[in-house]
Length: 300
Ligand code: G1P
Image 1 (cartoon, rainbow, N blue to C red):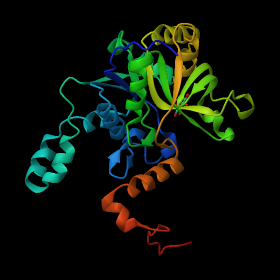
Image 2: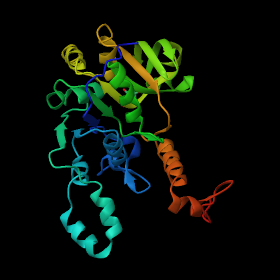
Image 3: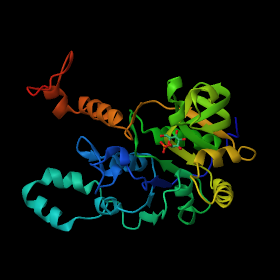
C-alpha cells in the first residue's frame, strides 16, 4: 500500500448532472433525471446530503441544457418559505435543510455530452490543485455510513485515486468500469488495470466501479490528453485513471451499503421500495411481514 502519512482533506465534490435521462422519458422530458425522486426527495439531494455529511464544503455541479431545476432546487424559495412559515413549519424545516451556505455551490456547463471524463474536466478551474470527490447521483446507496465518508477515510490515510466498487454478475460487466485486480487486503483492492464496459468474455474481473470517486488533481493532464487525442466521442474517466497508474496508485473500496442503479427503471423501483422500508411513516402501512401489502383492485 501507499504511505500512511495524512493526505490533504477533500473539501470539493463534483456532481456530473449533464446526462439526458432518455431511459426515463417521458418523465424526463422537461425535468432533469437527477430531479426524479426516491420517495419525496430528488436523487441529487441524496447525493448532496451524502457529500455534506462526509465533510464536503464546496459543491460543483457540471450541468447541461435543461438542468436549471437543479439550480432552483438548491436556491432559496422565499415565497414558499413565507407561506410555509404560516401553514407548515415541518415542511419549512425540511426545506431549510437544503440551504447551502452562500458561495458554496458552483455550476459549470458541459456544452456537449462527451462523457463522464469530459464532465469532470469541465470543472478543472474550480477544483484546481486539490484532491476532489465525484458523486454520480444515479448510484443510489443506502448505508449506515455515507459511502463517500468510507472512501475519504481511506484516502486520508493512503492518498492516490479511489473509487467505491462492488461485485456484479458476469453478464453485467458491459455496464460498468471493471477492475483488473493486483491484490486485495480486506475491503481494499489495489488495481493494476481498468476496462470501461467490457463484454463478459473480455472482462478482467467482475468487480465494478460504483459512482463515488476520490481523485487526485493529477488526473486533469490525463483527461486533457484524452480530449486532444479524441476530438469526437466520449471521454471516460476510467481511461484517464488507467493512464495515470504510473504515478498515482488506484484503489477500489468494497463499501458497506446497498446500491441501486437509479439510472434504470427497475433500479429506481427497488430503491423506492427499499427506502420506504426504512421510513417509519411508510413501513407500517405499506408492508406486511411477507411482503408488500399494496392494494391493487385494478388488474388486466
Ligand atoms: C459510469 C462510469 C463507469 C462506472 C459507472 C457507475 O458509467 O463510466 O465506469 O462503473 O458510471 O455507475 P455510466 O453509468 O455513466 O455509463
